[in-house]
Image 1 (cartoon, rainbow, N blue to C red):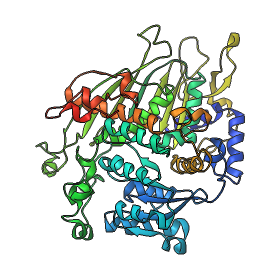
Image 2 (cartoon, helix red, strand yellow; image 1 turned 135 degrees about the horizontal axis):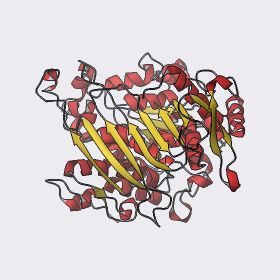
Image 3 (cartoon, rainbow, N blue to C red; image 1 turned 120 degrees about the horizontal axis):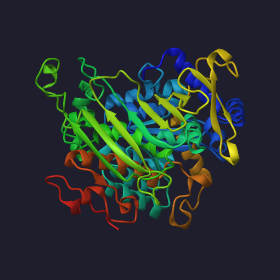
Image 4 (cartoon, helix red, strand yellow; image 1 turned 120 degrees about the vertical axis):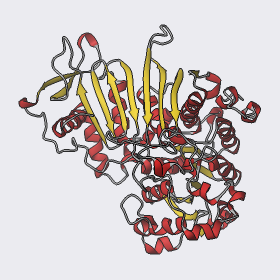
Length: 530
């Protein structure tokens, strides 16, 4: 992204200007109010009754972030469970930084000391009635999301699970149906659905300010080529090895290494596409109107780890079996695709392990403007410079005017030398500490538990998000899982895969894994039970 600091600052100011005045005033009021930003912005209130008594299962990297971001006015953390002794301590004490602060810094030493610590989710569930647990947050390795989630539903607990929803789509469908049968909420932590920044960005796209969207470029690049630079391949602590060696098999892991380094293995994780790309495809789907993709193709390979040559000799013994470079292309339907199948929007995604020059995020290219979502913290907006337009490009400010002949709003631009319509700091008026949506998703999960029952599935379906239902329920999250896991299959099979509508239907037995088996797989093992 070859933009100067001045151009980036201008892009953030342009985004703030384009967001309607009434919306900006509303956000300022929400920040100043007694409720959290999510509660005010997404249309729910403070809880009726006591905070929801919640247990956390899994307190590693992501679980500790969720603990650090949990909203005490909505959620009362009464217990945590983790197989690893080091993670149990981490849940209480944190990592000594502002990302994973631990419960002592979050709720105070006295309250943190009252939280019960368990060596496994099974021990925790055995004590659920004694502790009055109502809900769980699951942040364990991917292959155990659904098995543990089913046990929690059978125990009568509402579930918020980390993404990706499950290890395969059969698990997704059976999990959705179990939640419906038990009349319990199933929420999935694709936090962009609760990001105020992304919701405002999507509103600009849906209002037509960017014109026709034909291309979205998304990426999450990292550089793990330096020694000890791969967070997915951490060292194994002595206390964890001593406590767990020979015991992890009953919890779904072949070894302690597979538990600790689970993201490196296809048996426990979903690779770059599931762990990183699912965020980007989720965002693309939001920008394009929550539509399902038409097809996907791509390439994935283990191009660095284990390859002989200068600069990679120390990687030859790396244990991973996931790809370290992936490049995929999705075809999405445009607004007139039903009438003309040439109307498509293309979304490309890349994730690599040998270069991090550009920040992760999404670049939305429209016929009238360009939107850049940078690291979930910044949004930059630029008017398209073209023949017949009134200026544009990365060096011009913009404002929003009504369209001609009764059309929608459009962007206009003027030279930066003309001055800004309003004084703004480097953040474009949004501030530097923009929430990524973790707190808001947990707020709404607890609000829904208290306020949307006793029937959580009116008419046999989750309450629609338009009516205040979960913004990322099981059905929505399954679509994200289908995109990520089908992309993995397209890469493995070296073919363009066309998505089937029945894959997205939780009451259909069809799944991409059953229809696209890999070598050595039995398709019937992946057919969902109806």
